[in-house]
Length: 185
View 1 (tube, rainbow, N blue to C red):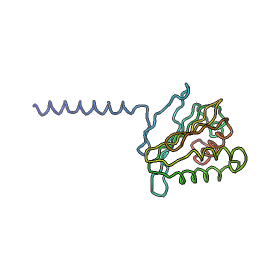
View 2: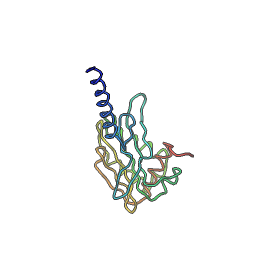
View 3: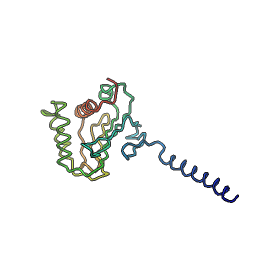
View 4: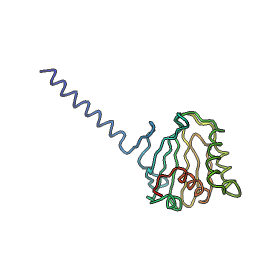
């Protein structure tokens, strides 16, 4: 009889712990072991998590990237054109050297948008790449565009830099969303 009573209490205890654990993670999504909040408030504006994805190189987990958007666009063109808050957040799952990060970003961006290889956009890309540094497992690279401001690059993977205006941010987000199609085409 006592065993049945204890078993009944244990079930309630397990259920309670399960509910508490679920509540602790409510409002978050998880991909590749990385948890990100469903929404953030940035400069008084709410941005929602639009997408999360694990990036692997060969069989190594490299990073999880998340895209936060203030608006709810129907396609990538709307997402880029919108003068609203946008954020790309990278959480690294392994140590990455500065040279690996710079080479990867330079190649990925310039190969998909030749305008990033010359003129003002190339100079702004150079400023962003110059801010990058070695990043350890669990470190972040956070790229945020805010209207009437520009692009802010921060996190452990960057010394921090601000690039004014919208043109470089548009080029960067256009390349990223073209290379990682998350909207219907």
